[in-house]
Image (cartoon, rainbow, N blue to C red):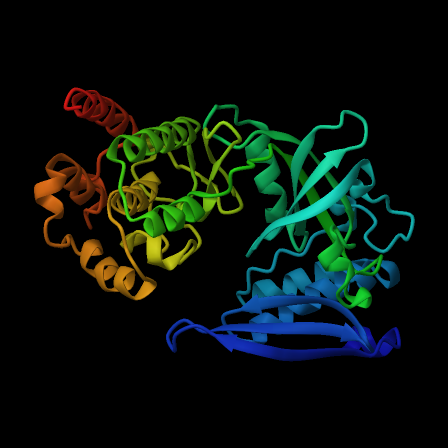
Length: 387
């Protein structure tokens, strides 16, 4: 508040929502100046959300008036044990500079594809080569955001979404739906964003594919195993690079125009410690999507086995039809405990055994991605011989 008074800024911090179960609440705080919304931030407590919202205001105004306020707030966050990671302007570009170029100027015909916790994704056409790409826009609140680009830049595999480049720019409308919203929310100078240009996966996500398959009420086992084999190969490659994805789920598994599987959304990726370390790295607790999250991921010590657990759930979904979300919810809890619907074992005995291994509550009893790759290649071969 001292900063606001000294620089005659009238900023308003307001808790606008509260969600999640009682033991794991999430508060959302917005910061604004008059009718201009500067941004929103989430935290486990109201104070944490307000501090993160203050970070947004500092990125917009703090550097302009008094750069050392960032280091001062970093020191404050360390004293309060809040991992806020404020960053210096030199790392992010001139967020307050009205001449900061817009990376979207390189493209035409933006069309929204999806919106997740870590940014907006739009389909665009490059003005020079006329090719279509996906561009993900993420607000830069700390240096952790830049990790996704560093990871994507070093990955090259047929089952990983291909990365082309990334640029920093102002937070402005990236498609027509954003433009139609309150323009003050997206005005130039409201913050710095990272624009990641990636391969376009035109046939949507596995989540959408499963939903459509359920409506058709028919499981094609060979197709399901082919999809799963490609997912395994992507995960095997990720692990070979000493990385952990941490958020594997059908919504993050995409299809190209040729229906090739691509694993995407590396916003939560982290590095492995390596077996030689003989200990787990202190990691972000509870990072991931709860319904697919491995049990140990709710704590802060785990390794790449957390990526194997959701694979078991994904394979189960590929082989089982749910006629409603209510039906899915009833079976989901049981499957996570190793209990399967009636008739599933008789129809898929080998797959059930593999799923149960992947869903082991003891991470060390789960098969590695390398082992899964070998076993499912054999399973596909046996399955093809039965037709």
